[in-house]
Structure formats: C-alpha cells, structure tokens
Length: 315
Image (tube, rainbow, N blue to C red; front, side, top):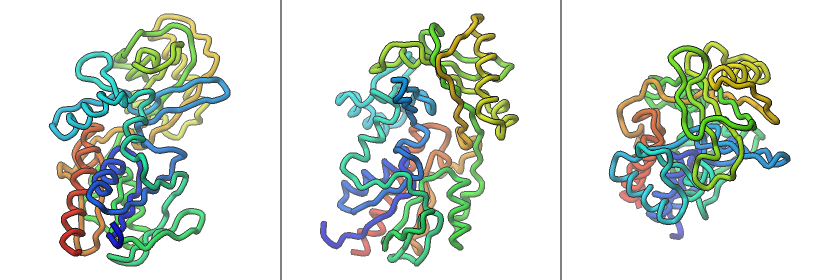
C-alpha cells in the first residue's frame, strides 16, 4: 500500500512479531529491530554448530487459554510450526522454540544484531539511532516490545516516557545446557529447595533429534543470588546439583550456562498495552498481562490494534 505510514517495532520476540504481523496484514509497512543475533526473544534455541547440538534454553513450552492465541496455535499445528508436548495443554515450536516467531515474521523486514539506543524526532517523524551510530527512519509510529526495564531505560535515554512501564518487575533465570547421556524422558520439576527449578530433555519434544541434551532452569531465588557470577562457575554448580537430583554421575561432553536477566514476569501491569496517541508511541510485552507467551501475543495484538485504529483514522 503505497504511502501508508511505516511503523518501527523494537523487539522480535512474541509480542513484537505478533504486532508486526497484525500491522502488515492491515496494510501498514513495518520494520523490526532486535539486538539479538536471531529472532524469538526468550523463545530461544541455542545452536552449537561445531557439535551438532541444539537446546531450547529459554521458554520451554506455551499454553493457549484464550481464543485469539488458541486460534493461532491451531493454525501453527496444522502447518507443523508447533506441536503438543508432555500433556497438560503444553505446546512447543517445531523444530525449535523460535519457529512460531519465525513464522509470524516471515517476509517482513527484520534487522537483527541491531541495538537501538536512542529515539529521536517526534510523532510522525521518529528516528532511531543504533549502537553503531547508524540512523533509521523516519517512522510514523513506534512500538517498543522489549522487557519493561529495557523499555523504560530506552525511553528515559530519549527523553520520553510511558507512565506505568516502571511498575513491571521480573525474576531472573540461569539456564544450563548440557550434552549428557540419560536423564528424564520429559519435563521434571525441581524440588522445593536447592538451585534446580526445571529439567527438560530436549529430545523428548517433537521434531527434535535424539540424544542426551538436557536443559536445566535454576530457581528464581538461586538465579537472583548468583546473578553476577561467572558463567563457568554457574555451569559447574548447576551440573553438581543436576547430578544430585538425578542420582547419577554426569560426564557432559559439552555444557554452558546462559543468564536470562529478565526471564519471568513477577509483577505485571494488568492492562493489554501502553499507548500514547499524541506521540504515536506504544509498548507491549508479557509484562503488560502476565508471565506467559500467550500474554506477550495478546499484548502485541492489542498494541497493533491501537496503532491500526489511530493510523487508519489519520489517513
């Protein structure tokens, strides 16, 4: 649609990808920016090419409770983008957890490894500056879908604000990826004490190759206490705890730890999204509605609909 307002979307996780797809389907050009090497946000798959390994080291599954996300998941499953796993309404991306986000962003312009550090300009002529000093824009409207603390920091650095974003809080999570023989066949909850909150054998998920690839998520309290520890130290401690939990000596052929500083929402805003029509600036994410992938989806959808109504009325 020539001349339609272009929207910049910061963040290529579930919220940003959902907003981008909704806007594109409504005829609005979008450009998506993400600081990561790939898309997906916490719906992440770590690939170790030299070892032929892959781990879902972020979110392990998603559930669909409301009609909007349930319809989306049903469509993904018909096309093999996701599949049920481990009962209790759990679903996973296929062949990795990033697959649904890749599907939403298919055919849309996405700039990865691009950290936006400043927003300049004003409504209708926003410009973005990235960490390398490059300028992007102008854009008619902006949608920021990063974790709430990152969103708040970017807005503050740009002399902007969306009241409420500072109220959202997160728990961190250290994630251990280990190639070891054996382990649980599916998902194993950790005990009430100790560092381990969750153990998953990646091969138990549909569409994954066989092999002893384990993902361990540390508990929020343990992760918070060890937030600034060295990755090697965290990996060693979690391997020891894993051996104790499984009651077996472990001889990993490869292991690494990944820190998710903003892993799970602890305090949400209980509103679908934030949007300032005067600025044509909005924000969305699971931090708006709750600690679920579905919440991120629904928040991104809500922000896209606000933008569509606003920009459509201004045509």
